[in-house]
Length: 457
Image (cartoon, rainbow, N blue to C red; front, side, top):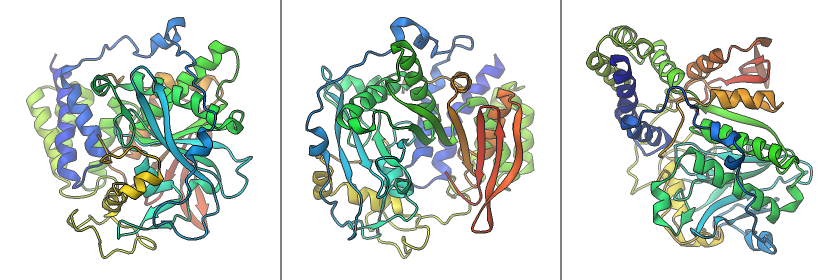
């Protein structure tokens, strides 16, 4: 019983650690909040919570509504403050996933400037849980980023829509601009309902954009989207199998710094903190003495060392342990950084300011509301069984990790892969760009691991 007690103490202590390490609201805090909420909920150690999907009654119905004219209505004329020379079509709006409850998910879709008719279709999901994918669009891989005035945009030269047509989905309802007219929906959100709604979103979105029905489709995401991505892929796989036809042409999944297994996730964190000089020898020894693999000798000692482990790094950015922190007050967002040429730690504030402008919400066809970055009842402790099932279906599976992220570090991903006991197909080796090592790659049977040097989540 002591081991079980410390296991749940570890889950609860994560919140405290994340609140101390990170200065602004982000996915790390959302993940910590979620894990704390699980303290009183003990998942069954023997029943896999997604087994019901294999039952005939567990597959989702093909809830499809007429979408005539919706694509044209969703087309964006121009976003406020966008730069000149935008050479691609982009769309945004809502797809209803439950008409009775009045539940609808918001999306932003950026087509490729070139070869949009042949480039693959990609869905991007941020983690949290319950964090907006628009933060991924405007801070990471979308076509635009927000200048430090919070009012104008500039092009992201490394945007994914240069090589793919990318959907950014705000999921579940209650995240970002997504909503439900049934307030109880917000209290009953979990992994299964999120996968269900995302699946219904996709089959309706493909009716709205029928030219993409047969396009090669990939699901991608980061952090807690390690759950979202794999569970949605599994849902698609089972529904294609049930229908005996390819309803959605899923070809693969890509997960970045993904939370996919609680056990390896925590031990990967603790080992990363110590090996990167963020924890003392004493704390690391205490973690492994009293909490090693959750078989602790004393739950209180275990909890005390967990608190120390999360406190000791101090006020740093856990997503990128070497990055500067935003030193600006959120009420005065303009910083001294040049976001075009340098990493700007204050960029989240610019995005919050931009997306809360009335003219921006109107251009995005969004309901007028206060947009926030992060706004769960069920979650399996591991989704490794789902990954194994997807591997047998022939999907391409990539797990990638930036090597300076301590929230869901590369060590956690490697420990999770070790649990799968996969044979190595191609040995660990560097990959390069512009004659410099960009990271490392190792190929297993059915799965590829990629690291990115000097990158966070």
